[in-house]
Image (cartoon, rainbow, N blue to C red; front, side, top):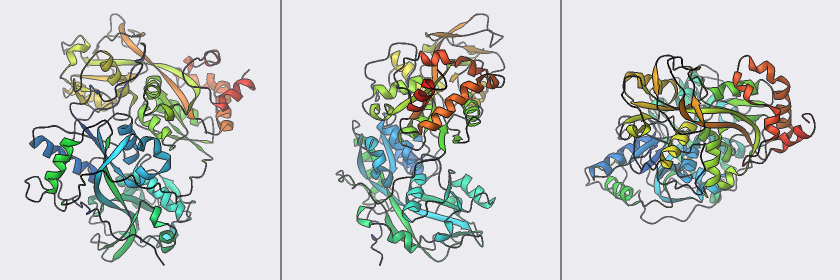
Length: 583
């Protein structure tokens, strides 16, 4: 017999179609910079890149984002402000919030309950429940997968790496005895495209039905979660609910059974929730001009007790192939990641938004190795909220030094950093190390909260926006030269340890003072030491052959590694390499 919780008592919002899709937000992000003595303790709440309180959501177009945009409108109507910052999912939102890079977040309940996220959960408090979302198990109609059990041994799109969906899917399949399913980390739209192209056999996704992307898709079918999986859950300990949905989509007219997970509004403990609580009360009041359908009664005025830890999920199996996080496509970190991946068949290389996201995924045990800026590591070691998790990292290789470029158009008339106050400026993509560097630089210069019209854009998009006049300046942390900067631009000087050289940018007449930031390859302390040892040995034996395609490797040498005296201990695998093959 099933021992299932009944339908949600949280009065689900189900407002996807009712919430208007507001224009893109003007987000900002994280922060530190290197080349000067660090503060003894960072005040993570004083964010020069945020104009007001920041609410972290999921991806644009999703339920969390739409709810957040509506609440921002209610707050604005009351004379306040609320910034909406999209993220790649619930895990990233939780860690960004806990680490001081936001004030509020919407997070799945199972992410809050997972023991592996205990440290981040301890830095936040629940404000109240918002909605419940359902686990969609979507397949091609008439395809090879006709039941939930048929997923065994198949390739499944399971949400972006670091998303709540990815965690939910992995946990549900393990509890259901289907740990052999190959998970492919794709979000909703890429996963849907992969399903249609038959690159995956199913799409598993957590979202509040109906999802607009799935409307009108007559070639799809929804699998009910199997009895075996449902019966595997001790529901008293589970963060999940049982849901039966009748005709959730026009192409699925029957009744499907599935798991549902509540989503909560949470806050950083230091943050006063009054303004957002007032907005939620207005949204929940059907007499209010700002009311949202079906929101009545959702908000709770007292924080509920923390949910019990979900102990039913078996621990994730140890990865035989280590996951290495690099950086954005087309960037230096991505190139280095490809080179390192070519040295070992035991590495899976994943391109990401950058250093901060890499550090979060390492802390959340979603990856094993990553390329990370030194100032991002430094910030993590300075903060009480992150010191333990970042302190679990170990050095694998000190890499090369990058330069903070502050770019403006040659005809802008801007000549100093101080002239950027109040202007629209690209500060790097959310999750990038560039945002970390910029925030800390401005904080050290005494810039108060909201000093910039910060735009979370980086790479080629930032360069194009700068040339097109949508931005007055843009920050880039990169090796010299930045490949995309092929025409005259002005570099604003920044006091630091290096310089932007005319040899790299022919239109420069003299070096421009700049800030240097070193990159590191780091790993979790529990990453397989034999794989790390083999990688380090292979790198030094093949370094010269790598130099032709990637001259950055010229800055990495064995003498420099042996002289390393940074804050991270050496990884056991690196130590083994130095004591044996690389003596």
